[in-house]
Image (cartoon, rainbow over all chains, first blue to last red; front, side):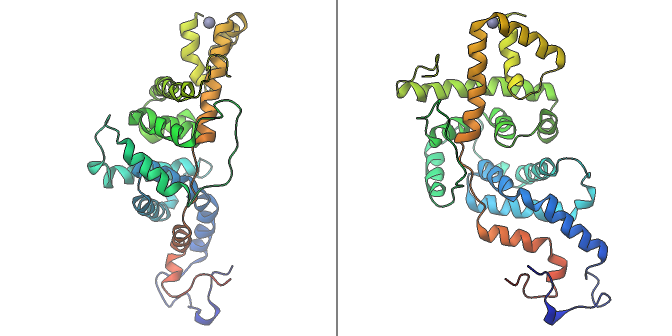
Length: 209
Length: 85
Ligand SMILES: [Zn+2]
């Protein structure tokens, strides 16, 4: 893959925005540090917006901003966490005003969303654990989405994205202790939901089988 | 440590986010309490279920392309195409 079109080379003094060596360095660094997290960001955006088009816009906006302010990214820290924070802020600014009321969950919307997107763009890397084997992806998804946002968010960031408490605290702008207790309470709620599903299949959740 | 405290700590324990002291206390309690041991296994499973059962979507190719473009924006203004394959 080449970045320059040999037929249309521009000389450095030709345009103010022609690439300097510094700019080139920034670009390749940006590719290595930031662009590799595209899928994770897209999934996060999907969870937040529940709408593929909005998720698209949100991710684009995030990368645009990230590139612009890439010099303020502290080298050596977690770039993924930095990007998530930017995306979250963008989301709050753009979408939250029109989002659903807290505590009110539209299950049909969630299901519809899940079905539209499930078959078309599913990541193939997927493993099965023996336990809760019969739990459907959709059920876990619905259970998670049905949690109050403050709980859902930290579970997502911790369990799915693998961020540390410190990184999450920074993202949600709350103390680490708050993150910790939200995770505790959120998981408790989540488990109640999941056990409800599991019982439906005759699982005894006390023993695992 | 009593069972109640142990159960609160389990959540952070599965994330590896306990302090050394907390971890020590929890471990001691688990070694003495089979109910909590079972509960701890459940806690680990719950985390795993979320991790493994939530379907990850691939970003659409059009989005990937536009992000790749983005980091070459300044260059692109002078050029029609970014990539030759
Ligand atoms: Zn106990």
